[in-house]
Amino acid sequence: MRPAQKRLVYLSLAATLLALFCAGILAGYIERHSSICPDNKPPIAQQDTGLGQILFLCHNGKTVTSNN
Image 1 (tube, rainbow, N blue to C red):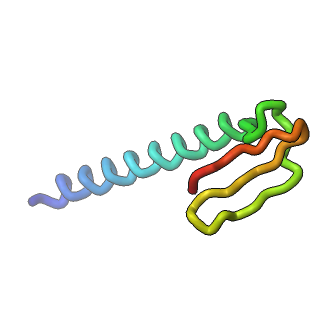
Image 2 (cartoon, rainbow, N blue to C red; image 1 turned 180 degrees about the vertical axis):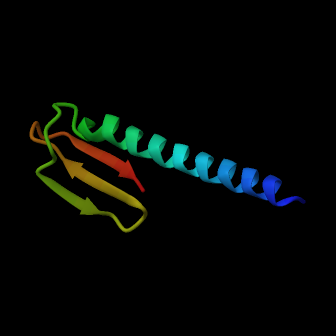
């Protein structure tokens, strides 16, 4: 493999990784306002059941389960 080909491969790999990183940052920014509770407020309490599930208590008294 010639040095020019190696450089092209490394630059392509770096560009792909940078694009994936930027896509992850953008996805996190877009989803930052998603809430667990249906009333879009943060839960008032949470409890770990020890089985990979977390129970969240919302302001309206509803319990929501989240799987890890």
